[in-house]
Length: 130
Image (cartoon, rainbow, N blue to C red; front, side, top):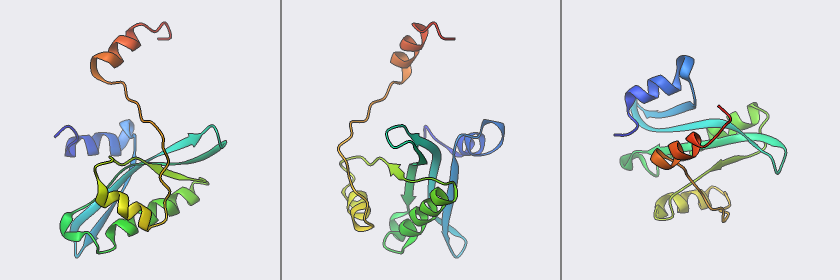
């Protein structure tokens, strides 16, 4: 897969650390995880957390693991003096969307954009900054 165990070790720990993570287990069996990063909202002038991923195994859905993970990230947001927690979800993932509505989150109509691969490289090459 594009993001595997080696990437977790490389980017989750040590000198190349880029994100924090939490796991959920049941009797020592890993059933879910979340990855998140510190962020800042210029419009609000406040720090917060961007949750990159929230995953719970199918067999553990409905067990409270997802709620426990997102609650832990909410607590971490407050501990870091953050004022908000945001994340994205694919529109086709109706199960996740229903869960997010169920826990009281609001869905807003932001347009997500990405530059990657050749387009990212082309734009970076055109820069005089570095």
